[in-house]
Amino acid sequence: MIEILWERIKENEGQVFKQIKGGEFTYEVKGNSITLSRTRRSISKNIFVEGLKHVPLDNTVPLQHLQAPSYLYAILMDSRIRKNDW
Image (cartoon, rainbow, N blue to C red; front, side, top):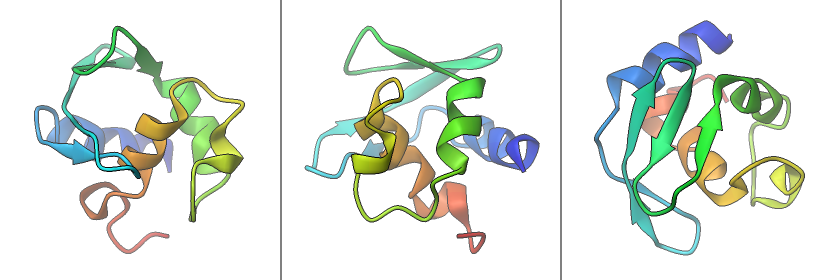
């Protein structure tokens, strides 16, 4: 599943995503990680593997132990990324 997810993430590079509290951001894919536009943080593909274990998500609470949980939530729960998979 991660490879399908990662392809979708790459396809949507540069698109605007919205955090749960409304903040908007874009990202750039660099190898096996993404660099976020609103912060100096990046999220590795391995973090998405961990995040996938918790989908579908109602909020960011299950992701709090992972890096950049609000950004991770925004990407994982976006309809362009999840399609009809969760």
